[in-house]
Each structure stands twice: as structure tokens, then as C-alpha cells.
Image (cartoon, rainbow, N blue to C red; front, side, top):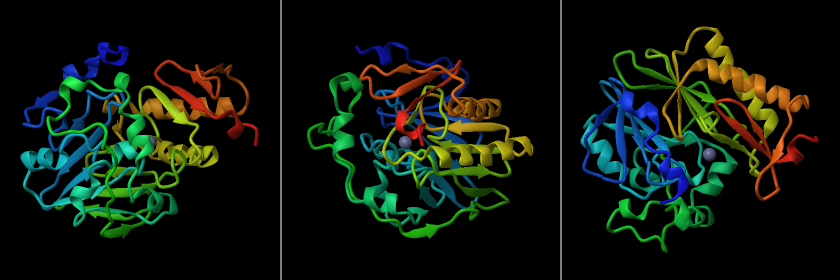
Amino acid sequence: MSSWFDKLPRSQYSSLQRISISESWFQVYAIHPTVFAIYEPYHYQEVISYFIVGSKKSLLIDTGMGIGNIEKVVNELSSVPLIVINTHTHHDHVGDNWRFEQSLIGIECEFSKNNDHSLLTEAQNDMKNDRICEDYLPKDFDKKSYRIKPYCISKFISDDDIIDLGNERKIKVISTPGHTPDSISLLDIQERLLFVGDIFYSGPIYLYRPETNLEDYIKSLEKLVCLIKDNKVDLIVSSHNIPKISPHLLIMTLEAIKKIINGEVMAKKTDDDLYNEYNFDDFSFVIDPKFLNK
Ligand SMILES: [Zn+2]
């Protein structure tokens, strides 16, 4: 068994209520009475999608890797009519988008448009033997033909839009590009939860892909740190590894990236010698050095 899997289960999950579901690829945890983390622990990406159940509408935030059937999971959790949105369109968060064509909303962005008609290379890369626990794969899953199926957004939304789930449960869309041009964060205004996608997670934060924009990333972090300093956020909710993150860590992330930009932190090279890795206590950054020399 590969090393990432030996570290599981991560300790945070022992404090969360686990919800029983029939799809064995996923584990579901309640992180709040009406917010469920839909976790994929048997792939090294450890992707987490989220499901918020409101009185009139429910909201699925990301659809995971498309290995297990996430539609079945949400149908078991609630029958409230569904809206589906992505924090960004990297392949590991849009895998089951194709199942939700009637309910999928998203921002209009060139980068998203290029991702909605099948992601093959990235998907196949994630099928390498050391990245997946084969014993847990769904019986009808075929590694060789795995790709992200095409999907269509049914309604476009913009920065600052509100998604109304009924009974004062309002989710605010916040454009936070940087990790990708189409990255958004979602603020659950009433419950004071901030869903940040891949802007922050506990682990190596990737800032080396061609679609990364470091300047935008810092501006987006500043935007989110403002919300924290304005006392609007109790909990950061992230999309890999563990769901619950202290807002204080996001403030530290912004300070850390500014130190890197100012050349105050020593880097080591990644194993492939391509990128710089900067280590901090609860996270690290993997950055393409060419982004730092602008
Ligand atoms: Zn991503």
C-alpha cells in the first residue's frame, strides 16, 4: 500500500460525525448540521466536495473525481431540489458534472470553457498505481477509459451573486482567481462558513501550473482575509485532505506568500527539480520559479 494511504485516517475525521451511505468510494461527514463533506479518501488527491442542505434548495459544491457516483450520495442525503457549482474546473473537482446538466451553474470564463469538453490527460495521470487504492474502486469502474466527461453549464453567475437556499440561508459567490482563472470562494453568510476550493488546504498548495497567476492569488487571499478580519467567518472549508481549517491559517498563508515574494524564505527544489517548495508549519507552497522573477 502506498505511503499517502498509510497516513490515513487523518486525525480530524475522528471528531466528525460520519454519515452512512451506500456508495463505498466516498466517506461522508457532517461538518455542521446542514453541511456534509463528501470525501474521497481512496485516491491520493483526497478530494472533498460539499453538500449544503437549505429549506428550499440544496447546493453541491464540486462533483469530485467522477470515480464514484456522487449523485447517488446527494440523493441519499436529501431530496431538496439541487443546485451544483464548482469552486474551479480542475479535473478532480468536476468529475461528475455531466450527471447534473440541468442544475449546474458556473461563472463565464475562457479557462472553464476549455475544460468542459473532456479532460483526459490529467484524469489518466491520476490513475497511476501509487495514486489509487484499487480495492475500493467501484466494481463497474474502468481505469483505462477514465476521463472527465463533457458537461454543460445551464446558468451563468457572477462575482457577488447570491445563491438563495431558502429561509435566510444565502451563499455569496466571491471571485478568487489565482489557483485558476475561474476559482471562486463561497461564503455561507448565515453559518459563517467560507468554502475556498484549492486556494488553501492543509498540504502542498500547488502554484506552478500554467493557469496559475500569483498576483491574482495574492489579491484573492487579501479579499478573503478582509472577510476574516471583518469577523464574517468562523470556519474555512477546504477541498483536499481535511475539511475544517482555522481562519487564522488563511491570514498566515497570506503573510507567508508575501514573504516568499520578498525573497525572505529559503526554497528547496521539488524532486523533479522543476519547482520551488516553501515549507511552513501547516502547509507548503510549490511554485514555478518563473512566476517569482517577473
Ligand atoms: Zn485545483
